[in-house]
Image 1 (tube, rainbow, N blue to C red):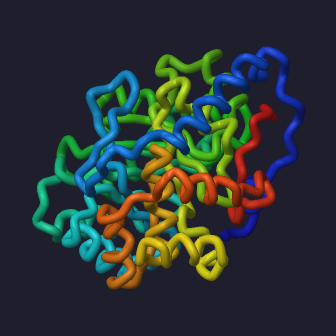
Image 2: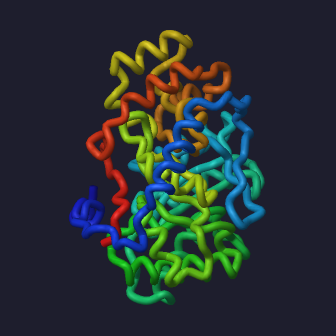
Length: 326
């Protein structure tokens, strides 16, 4: 992690104002939705599945490919391997330093630009809406340097810079959307309060996506239920827990039951939660393994068992959102 970023990603928060708090009724409805999503009958899933984004004709592939900490040369090779094995959704960011390489991989793949869903993110505001907009345009041009180039999704990477910076970056993303340089816009690591706050300054609301850390040990039930209520698509970063739980006895048992790996269980769990998982690997065999999750289904008992692993904020390895506004 770059110097100073850890503080930016883990600020001290103040209590959520009353107008942004979830009501008792809302909490009950959210919990009912969450429980229903864990126990509902499984719809047959496929690698080609798409989810509609709210207030948009854009659809997002339900399985993505992450490139966090993928070095430039490696990134091109990894993305090419993923694309050759059926992935059609790649998630990068300004902070990752490999936007150019993601775009290069798509061009080398021989696929049409419109066949691949590409996401990037802005982490730090530049000082004005115009300057942040220019910073975002630079990213678009790295990824898709053609005339009329675009990204499919542009996110604000973190809410932690404060309200005015959040407002500035959202204004820049709205301009990208209006001009067709981004086909959809959203946020990352936003809690309930941050998204509610947007109503005071956003022309586009709700954000179409919220990308947060999600896996059985960090299920973030309040924000996922809130997003479901508002039809905000939830993306799951670190769905594999960076392999830290690969030998967890419960996870291993579920994997053995289905004859699959721990990673495959975790990805399938996300898919059955209606989250969009973004597994990351630079190992070709694991890239292939991570998309082979459509030949088995986790049953109701499996889902309940995995749901029972939730540790709340303590289960986060990167960052649990705060549902209180700064």
